[in-house]
Length: 100
Image (cartoon, rainbow, N blue to C red; front, side, top):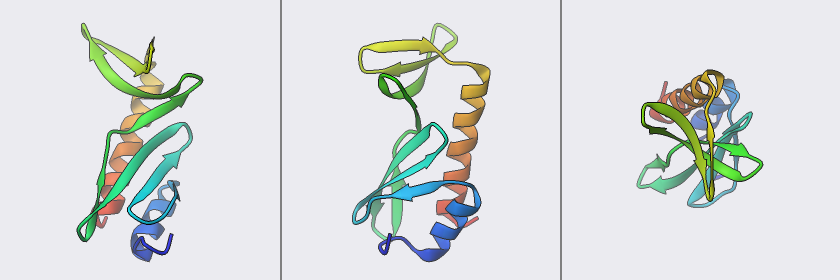
C-alpha cells in the first residue's frame, strides 16, 4: 500500500479497517462491510459502503420506509445490527481519511 499515506493507513488500522489493492484504487473492509476508494488528487474518493452477502455486495437502500440490502438480482431486509455496523464502518473510514 505504498500509494497511501502511512498516517491514513495507521488511522484506518486503528479503526480495525483493512486495506487492499494499490495504485488508484483500494478496498476498505471490516467484517462484512466493504467500500472501494479511488485516488482523487491529493486525497481519496470513496463510494458507498456495502455488506458482502452470499449474493455479492449489497447496498443499504430504503424502500417504503424499510431498510433493505439490495444486490444484483436480490433484496433482503436489513437488520438493525447490519444498519448500525454499516453506518459505523462508513463513519470510521470517513474520519480516518479526513484526518481524525
